[in-house]
Length: 486
Ligand code: BES
Ligand code: MG
Ligand code: ZN
Image 1 (cartoon, rainbow, N blue to C red):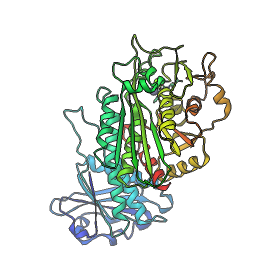
Image 2 (image 1 turned 180 degrees about the horizontal axis):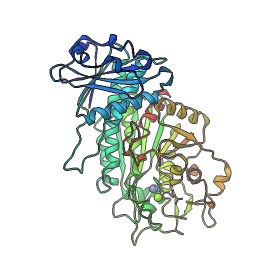
Image 3 (image 1 turned 135 degrees about the horizontal axis):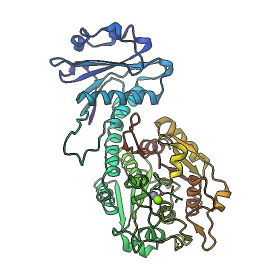
Image 4 (image 1 turned 90 degrees about the horizontal axis):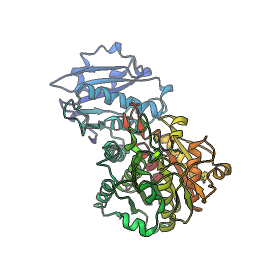
């Protein structure tokens, strides 16, 4: 989809659909704001019937002059950033259902919202829901919206729309990578996608293959990889947006391209969607790419450990002990707790080689996180209050919600092993999300660190507002907002 900003509404074409938003308060005066170019449409609508109720809509399809779509925004007092995004999503869903491919709107400014905010929230809602994964469909493909034009003379509009275009492009790439079959989104496949980012001269991409991973002794990544016929990869993307600044941010993403559970094999009902277990890696990669394209003046890294977790004659087993990159030994309590293993090595490697000023990891780490928060809130566990605060503010602004969980020392105690330094499973069965984080804490040294468990939010079992079914790319806007505000 292509997004544009235009000032002059008389450029509206006959094939366009012009969308207007009406609040409850405006329901008696809404026609005053309509440009004469769609007078034709206006004459065939019962203007009295428009009440401005949230989600209410009227459509006047016309061939020779622009069509009109009137959407109710509800009462000013009930409007929130999320309800406006949701309305954008409803609008997009309506247009897709009617095969409308070219839409335009004049941003409203109801209640306490200014025009720039509405431009952002409506456009976000539209673009984020304008998605279908149809790579494997040979028929019944849906037509998506191709053009979105905002008619505005607000000086903020062009940069907002440019940003949303970048977010849209990268959200589509991210969702496609997550939704694709695990024989396409393999460790080497994802590394190749990362490498293609380096065609942008501001991005450097380093790919470590199996031999280098062996030489560097990332023993936990190798352990998880043991059962897989595909070699592991460790990808490091870097961008120096502030060359004279010593500080940097490292984003680390879990890249399990298929999680069978290993010897602790997952059962039916739990294994089907496990190609999504690389969502953390995909999300940090496309958040990173968005940040570069937005020229954010920060030094940023994206680190992605990539492997499958498979069952085979050579697979790692419960009771095995392996040595991590930082020298700690780890007993395998359960081969299905593999995400923390590959992340542990990637975090320790990041601390040692990059020495960033802060680390944020994103991972589909625990089923417990889905039980706790469902599919609309991610778990946040951090060693740094300031980082927690900043991430929570970004969560509030973007609607990519986070909620903090505590990391008391008892949880860390539970991760100790009787036969090694650590065990990848806890000695107590509850609070799985916190225990996963407690394990990871052993690999981040003293660097301020935040762990975001996206097990629930990365993948929707059904469409929810502007997030479609299956891969959501949750976290891209959160991280981009965090980096811009830093
Ligand atoms: N990839 C899973 C977590 C997951 C579950 C993600 C459901 C998305 C949806 C992870 O590798 C896993 O299997 N975790 C185990 C850990 C346990 C064995 C300590 C879990 O959560 O059951
Ligand atoms: Mg697992
Ligand atoms: Zn996993």
